[in-house]
Image 1 (tube, rainbow, N blue to C red):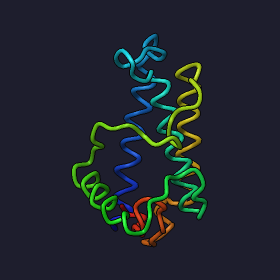
Image 2: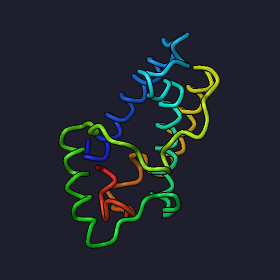
Image 3: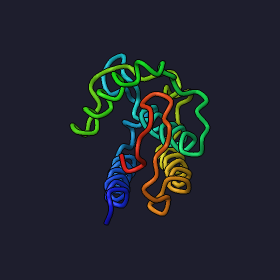
Length: 146
C-alpha cells in the first residue's frame, strides 16, 4: 500500500472511532467539553466542515481558506510538518472557515453530517486519486498523501 493508501486507511480508522464516540455520547452531545469550549456537536460540525473545505481545495476551490503570502508559506510549512510528524494539532484557535456555524441537533444528525462530508472528501481525494500534488492556499504545494 502506498503512502496515500496508508493515509486513507488511518483516516478511515479515525472516522470510525469518531462515529463510535458520537454513538456513545447520549446526553453529553450538547454539553461543552469545559466552560467556554465547544460542545461535542460543534466539534463534529467543525470536523465535517474541515472535510468539506479540504475536498474543495483538492477540486481547486480555495475560497474561504486563509491565504498566506508566498514568502510566509515556508513558516506555515514548518508548522504543517510538525503537525504531521506529531500527529496532533497544538492548542490554538481555528481559522474562521472552520468555525462551526450551527449546532447539530442530535448525535444521529452529527453522524449523518460527518459521513456525508467524509464521502465528499473521499470522492475527490480517495486512494484512486493517485499520488498527486495540490496547491494549498496556506501550506503551499503538498502531496495528497500528507
